[in-house]
Length: 177
Image (tube, rainbow, N blue to C red; front, side, top):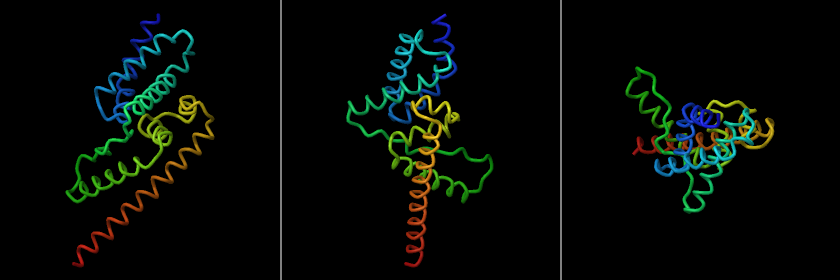
């Protein structure tokens, strides 16, 4: 039974957790190593983990191990700079340039968030998790998740607005010269 559960979880969630770790660590080998240790830890404790908590347990373990690994190696945990929002199939050159500029602004803004804020944004928007799932992963309440998301979005909005307005000021200054 234990092996069947492990195989099913690995098949169903392994790639998502790997991508999550890759965003945090920015090195595929590190993400693979941590992913293996996450599933090994789960395998060793699977009997004591409630079935409803499998996914939160995996994400929480992945998060903790990635943070510990980063601290150990004294690296900054960053979001990838090549973060992209998928482009519509048909877009003009101007739209593509504008989209890439927004993506850069979003990636830069994400780097200004603390680890907990990055995690909650990742789980909500990229992993499409509910507040209750996020609350279990973070070992907190749904209202705390909501507050954290509000704070993180506010910071992102402020940083992106600052970046976009400073870019437009720079462009207008260049065009006047």
